[in-house]
Length: 118
Image (cartoon, rainbow, N blue to C red):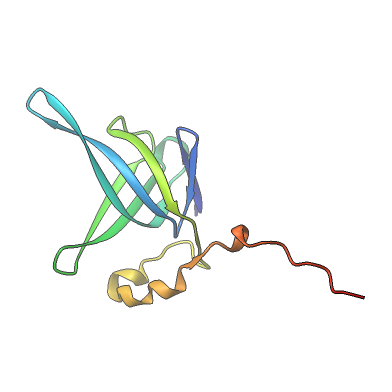
């Protein structure tokens, strides 16, 4: 089970909130469309590695997209918020999105503890 992945010098983990900029071809024009959501899981190895992103669309409808890591249609990926989770796959968010409270913000940004005064 993969817990992290890397696309063009941007690494992300399961539980991170990401914005994936995808190229969309309309006729002979190509435009960029962002897709923002939480990484539910990363699977596969090497060339076959894929990741799943889920967002809540208008009307509380969940939308999931799966991309291969080496897809030429991914322009870039931006990590909006780092998440800290205790599971490799967050499929339980499909059933109850209110359980998003289990995806805590990564605590690595907190200031280090000061030593106790003597």
